[in-house]
Image (cartoon, rainbow, N blue to C red; front, side):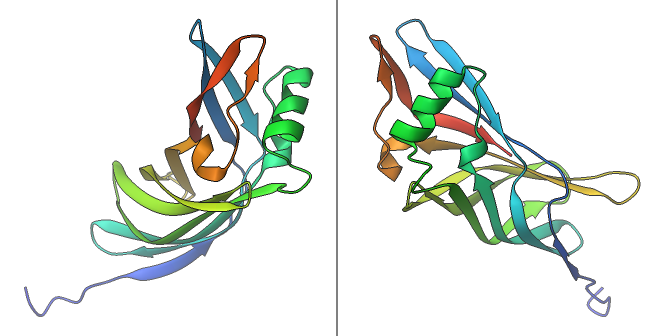
Length: 167
């Protein structure tokens, strides 16, 4: 078996479709605030071997595109807390993250949000359709205070510091 060649190849992928979703919990009352944004842009390099895929690259998220379904809440979120006029995009940086070819795997990366770079970790998965199309999924929590974002409070209701993100 030592003479068997190890086959690996790299492919650079640019997102063609996709979305960003997020969920924050507010209290009292455990109110779930759900939102979404447009597809990320950027490039991911997928280096494959027999049983794993190494992922390197970056994805930009258009923070200005985030919507929760209530325009007043959206305006407050973007103008007062995320300050999208100054920080219209977030950036997820991935360096040599190893994921299994099948199933989910843990990953770590750097998230630049609100002008602050901070480590994030979560779960990633690479799905391959019958036609060879790849879908890369990631989910991770983001602490608002890690990025210098004040905790939103309105009429006695406060949003939790941690927000769940999926892309």
